[in-house]
Image 1: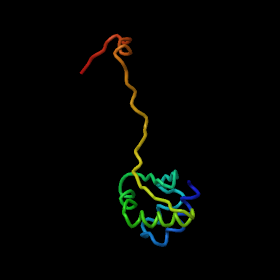
Image 2: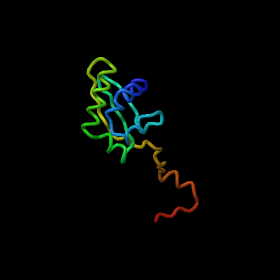
Image 3: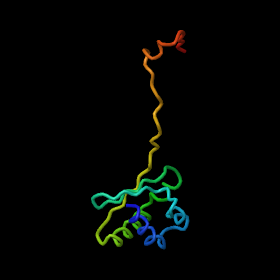
Image 4: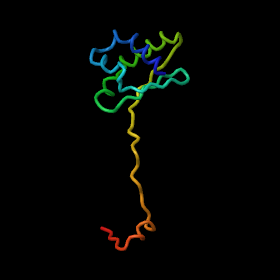
Length: 104
C-alpha cells in the first residue's frame, strides 16, 4: 500500500492545495491501507485530518488512485487513534502485600 500511496501522491499532487504537498512526502502523517478496492487513509487527528477530510480532496485522491491502479478505487479518510499502552490495573489482592494501604 505504501508504494501505491507514493504513486497516488505523485499523480494527485498538481490538483491538491499547496499546503497538502508537505503531507504527501516520505514523513507523511498518512497511513495507507488498500483492501477490496478501497484505499483507507488513516491520518493523524487535528488540523491535517481536517485538510484531507474534504470532498474535493478525497475526490482527487480517488481519481488519482483509480488512474494508478487502472480500476475504480474509493478513498476513505479516517482519524488515527492513539493506541498507547493502557495503565496497569491492580487488584485488591495485589495491594494486600503491602503493610499499609490507604484508600483516598
